[in-house]
Image 1 (cartoon, rainbow, N blue to C red):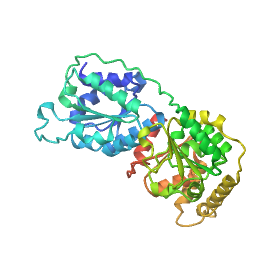
Image 2 (image 1 turned 180 degrees about the horizontal axis):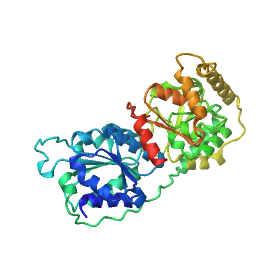
Image 3 (image 1 turned 90 degrees about the horizontal axis):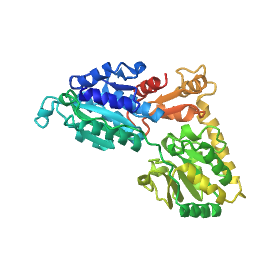
Image 4 (image 1 turned 180 degrees about the vertical axis):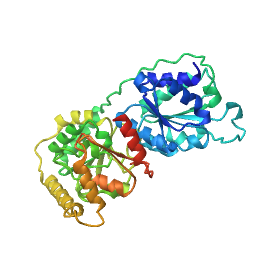
Length: 427
């Protein structure tokens, strides 16, 4: 086999079923190797052709976010792979495991300002966890293996730059066997748990602000809120994982919010931030703040944190609950939940009541109808801007739906290519 065919074999070994991209001359050996693999129905890989490389990267980012598995996109040399950059930034910031194959100009021409020359091994540094140029057949399988592992284990983007002539060389080194590892459970330091329990047992008013890091810990967060009599606000990325079946929900804060969550955080003695890297510091209160985060570089970078805790959310709550006093007033909680209910009825609800005959149709009403008729396991993708507001306010996650968008990178025109990736992954 040649290097391109070896690359495709390694992707198949890693569980990849498809590659999103646009065919181009320097990428031809890779595309032909995908053709020869016979497609996913025969145990190979499908080629998903798109109209623009940016769409390929967004589709791969969506697939990776929704499945948690490696997704792949590809672009030809120069301007081809350069178009991947917005989707790759989105994937990197969303923690989506994506591998980008950036084909390159002939290796003998690199550094000579050749036609369409760029340097993808430099360009993608800021939006990747791994970014390497393959310059020989001997080097190729180890770089590909490293790229796959970095993307999967670090939940980010890997980029391999592959000159067309190198991809057509005869493979000369064996491929390292790829066996995926299991994600570890990160448990908290015992002293942090004791200190947090002391703080919470002294506090009269506690608020919880939950982000995407509470995924898989819905019931535990609800139990914690019940014990603490704490209202739960959430980010847009956290909405999927905490808003449903939540009697303590007070909605969102920030630019997409509507009052009760922001008010609840401002009035609390203690704010607990669970698995969130919410960027808008102007909406975070100047109060005693606890941040629980499994990525330590995120601790304290948005607001002053009085007690940073490096841990997964679920084991932190499991260790904390036995140490908490149960005799608490629920006056603070009831007031915030009541305020949230009032806001949801008016003004948020005002756009959807008696709106059937209004012309033009309110977009809020359209979102409301979509929420009612969509399947219980529907995947919603939203473009950046007001579409995110309507998604945030009118779409119910139900615990079985997913709501995704370019929520950290904030790129435009992301929803349709993300929907392609979602649809292909979940036909």
